[in-house]
Length: 512
Image (cartoon, rainbow, N blue to C red):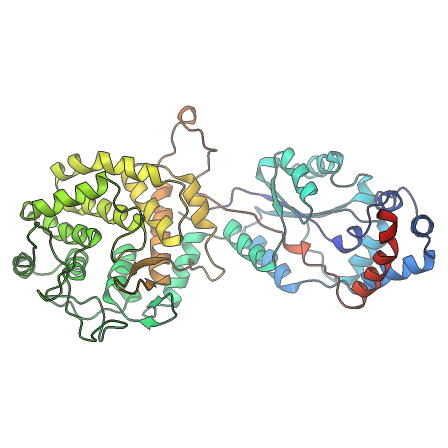
């Protein structure tokens, strides 16, 4: 089921360039339609000992240089069209009647707007509450489903005080992202990105080096169940982390490892007798403490709790978990004492440990294992809800929350805000080299995990209102705010800035 926006009304500002220059009483009266343009210029000139003609010339230059931002306008049109008539768009601006008419003549097509409200027309001026109430009354908009966008903090504060979602406009690109994230369908957009980049969803280091690894491809496949998206070899008996030569390692011929092999067998399956022969071989790589090792190479003694968990998942899925009891006991100690909080030797975040432990319980098919670890896992995951994290960490946290029946609206909000314009999610770091600490991430994996997290969390029931202190978020969820858009649609440039700067310099001594 596609996610739908909770907002049906967008109100944003236009023409701020002129009203932001002055806040003197003549200009306020002019914008409210109380005095004429000539009287305004005369009073402003008298107040600052400037020729009214010079005042008029400066503002004429500003009006002449106003330009529309077609990229932003196009985004609003696109999203409004995709809303199937559910989104109404209004303009609300502090602007005089003459200045408004001048702006209207600069844009040939105003069909984007369902209506336009000006301070001159209403007789009120932001941030006065009466202006907002008049617009809400005229449009019949529900404040709780209305987004208000303005570059002035005081104007946004007034909107918020009436129950609207207020957004302070700051950056053009952030606005476009917010628009897509608010009105687009995150799951659909994410899937489109994966499809367009099928077979090219490769990993990269935080130093910018591209590498090909089987590990991320297997996890993408598990999250999407779509073999056409990934680049994987024919199923081998034993897997190597890298596809081909190793990158940034002490040797290009890195031995195959038990963890990637375990992922391969739990995700792709295969002949059961071969799987058992692989596990028989793995049992030769247990250290004196009973901890299963990482590599099929006694010359490289390495272990990691997350790798242990993924190997345990293979053994439990084939009913052989009891053969790694000492490894499981150590994992429980890691969980109990929160030893994972700074990541592990090979994994970047605590969410990696918690997510893969949840995966173990899900696919392990062992009621005793679940009874032993699930209550403690619930406690540890609850401790992480709301913690900062990149898109992959948030997705992993949400997925384990969904498995445990925990609702995490705050993390859903954070994850949705990280979706990019192209539908992908910002890259998240999953593992790193043990010696150098260089991080490895995969935008395709992050996107696949984010999609899965949203879908699974959408199915997770919200807690009863009486037991939830957090604001209830409708499911499907939607994020951020929309249209700071046309706020930057009309900007002052060039000569107008020079004229206005000169005018402001003349006025400055009167404010000191």
